[in-house]
Image (tube, rainbow, N blue to C red; front, side, top):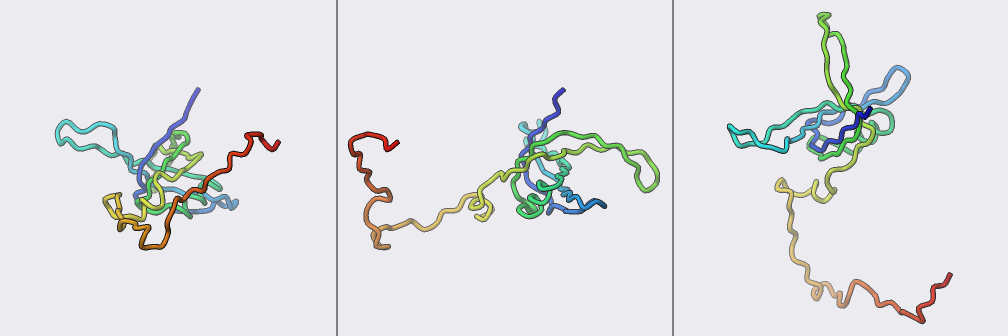
Length: 147
């Protein structure tokens, strides 16, 4: 049997890092994931909000480097959990237990404007005093490898 899921989306809130009674770190957060298709009525893409749980080093990593709005790629397994609410009613919820969490965007694009695109001033190498190529020429020699 195979139970593997990969999701890409944005965190809807900062991850919440807690520790079990035995000291094991566990982070929980929600990922907003757009569907690939648009609604027929409105023409807009629908979004699913998926609960994620990350244990141990993965949980610590997420809580340290991800914040609300960060793009993340989560790889893990789907887990269905039965529990009781405070009134004693039986509840069931689905969540993804993350094996790996990756950055879904570069730091540069995350720090740029809301449009996701930032254009800096044009570079002028003649004004900075730099002239020439960023690469140096290689001496091809006789073509023999040194090993």
